[in-house]
Amino acid sequence: MTAHIKIVGLGPGSDDAITTQTLREIQNSTHRFIRTTRHPSAHLVNDAISFDKEYENHDKFEDVYQAIADKLIAAAKQHQEILYVVPGSPLVLEHTVQLLLQNKSVTTEILPAMSFLDVVWSVLQIDPVDAGVRMIDGHRFTELAAGLTGPLLVAQCHANWVLSNIKLAHESANGDEPVVILHHLGLDDQKIIHTTWQNLDREIEPDHLTSIYIPKLAEPIAGEMAKLHSLARTLREQCPWDEKQTHDSLVRYLIEETYEVVDAIGALDPDDQATDEKFIEELGDLLYQVEFHATIAEQQGRFSIADIARSIHDKLVRRHPHVFGDVYAETADAVVTNWDAIKQQERGEVTEKSVFDGVASSSPSLMYSTKLQKRAAEFGFDWPDSKGASDKIAEELGELSKAVESKQDASEIALELGDVLFSVVNLSRHLGVDAETALRSAADKFRSRFQNVVALAEQRKLDLAKCSLTQLDELWEIAKQNP
Image (tube, rainbow, N blue to C red; front, side):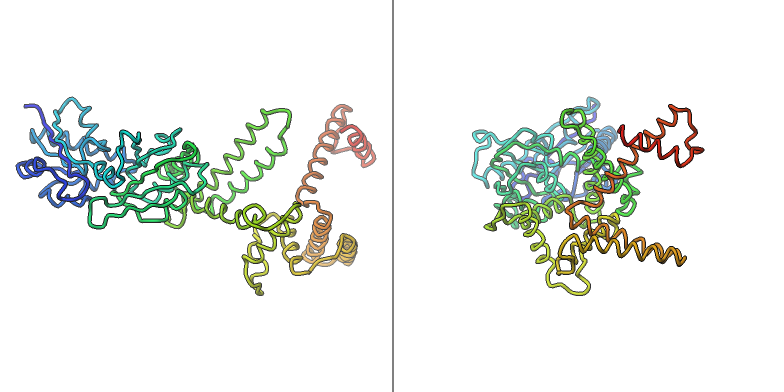
């Protein structure tokens, strides 16, 4: 006798929605199996073996479904006939059933059952055929909804991270697009929430009986960010190196990737689009660092990439009242003035401890010095013009010379040298020149010239390390004249 599996469905959730035929099969069966007991009507299936633990034993849903199918086939071969009970309808979003149908070592018999779709169309009061509704699995929203604008019914929205991924997939959304959240349809605590795309993941704590309906989107789903987020989560869960990383351990990579972006910007050629490829690559590496930190935080239950995107979006709107409000700013300088005023207002009333709040002490020294000076200048502590800053450099150089001549302690000399550098940064700020950029340009110029010096020495068969100062100076002057 061929092993046989009879499959029935518990309907959308209410006991009243289960067919008489299904109840009779449950009562008459000897060997009962149920995919999950997390269903309102699961209590009607007595003495059934549940597969709930399989969801804990595997990282991917595909592996969960395959494990369930394998165990059902083994049980059918052992008992000749078994009953398999699933939520909803056996033929709607039931991957285990599809796996059983594909296996030729057992026969399957599917009894019709009411699906949650029937309740959805009743609640929404639409004909899905006339409306052309496309049904999407929330786990695969990015790929399945690509190029679509709706209407879409999205099932399997059982967790906030699923809703966040769906939300991120629509990169061109303005936030006002209508969305209907369908929660516990047909049950006593049924909720139908009409909201917007912006608030999609803020309205409710979703579970396995949550779906969303998207009537129409102005532009089709792109989904590149959502795919990246899904990849980051997969690597975090399955790659041994990614699993071990923390916010602290990733700091060095964040800094390295930032500098590599700067190098790519420096290498951009307006007449050569090929240089864009390196820029794109380095920007991608930097973007992944942001995504990596967001994924770690999401696993800790703290925040997600959606929170990061929302935070910077809202801050930029606040900081641009001349674009999104009624403030007038015709010049770039006026924009900066408004920006700084809003920043100070956001920091609230200044106290002794909050004057330098928001200035990252781990910033590169030139940037750190510039930001400290700008913050102090907001409270009037500044030279009126560049002359005062320039005179200060001369003063600090004099103090450094005295410290060196008097052979003071090395730490004292270092402090005096630091004062000189800090004063130079102050002058650069008054001149409207970025100190980091200026120093980097000077370093790049030195690098290029000294490479020419080395090349000249090789041409003349000179040992550079044994050249006199006069010879070195001659080579340097030639390098300057022939960049």
